[in-house]
Length: 583
Image: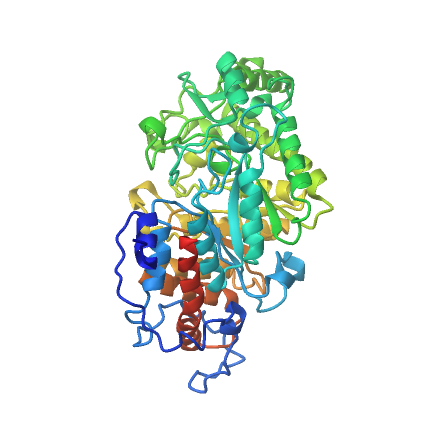
């Protein structure tokens, strides 16, 4: 006997779903309503307070749409979408209305009141090891649900270890071709991440995707291709930048492999570039971030809020250090990195090198080493960005680079966790300005994390200060005239986090930011939790507020009512997405 729709969806999700009917008074009249129509702004409500021109009005906070008889008890469609997507971690980016004309605005050309586009990250395992779309029906339904909410597009990890897995220069784009075409059908924009790192072992990693087999074989032959700490511990997340330009991978240098991969991506998806694919985020290290793997969680090596450890002890990095020391006239500095910088889980004051009084980081040797260590990372970024710019310069896509939000021990003088990660940022030196200037030379976007965090939410004994860190980065990008985009570092579905994101995205950092806002925000991430009833309503309101922008004239209550209206009007679209899972 054939199962009905709810039983079939429940079977797909592995979760029983109630067969109670979904009741709605608009099942016929709104069956073909479009997301665009639902997002149309109604006439201003006369109950909203008139805005005085001489008073700076504070941004209305994104509160959850009011519960109403219309919404109460009829969101089974969202439960279906949620359960259909169960067991998957997902990443999608939500964005603003009118993306065809907006894309990413440069700071100098941004138009007033256009808001911040929100993207949503797709699951890390959106494409399987067999190069097919993972859980195709659930994926399609989820994309349709996100589109109905006004999402601008999605962020997709394009894994080096999947596409070029079996042999050098042999690319299998199968699953990505299908996924990107799916996004195009739903009129969703795509940020494609060139993921040259291994998946697994970091915060939020829900699956394991190794580096290409032939790369792993070369690392097995020469373990120094992997980052190494002072105790000889190897890290296999990403190839050491010390051998960037050496032909250590079957006759090719790592940077050449990255170049060839990006060029093959461009050639294979040239019909989607600039239209569906609007951004290429270039992976430059572990977790796709421009940094060293200084705080690896795998096997319990590092635990928050430890200071991490320098990763410069493979033979290629040591060779570079030796050459730099000799060039500086101090050959004795070139034999090793700091030996008094403690262990992964120490705190700054536990170490001779990072302590505030007479710490080694302020000595001539310390300054030499930190300059060399951070410059190696910047040079790595320069090399890969030069390749990316050359490949995509005539395609109308933007290039971006992700930088980690290392906010713990930010209140100390040495900023030890940032230093071990390669960011030479201390109380006396602005390391993020140097990164922003490097990105600016290649016209790249500075993508930064931890946007949702507040200082008081973090352990104050560790002097965590994510808000102050975000402010510093915003000022650095402003000074370098580089567009700034943001991400939340951890999954958050509450209004409190949404309010913080709205505040950070407005870039009201010095009272003189003008119309400048973040050029985009990436929401982490699409998951069953996102489609839960309360989370979904809050998410829709959040997207609407981001669309409004910081110069919105309308009051928060009006936006909140519109968000509730939108959720109700797009219910048929979400129901269609859920029903698509059975086909």
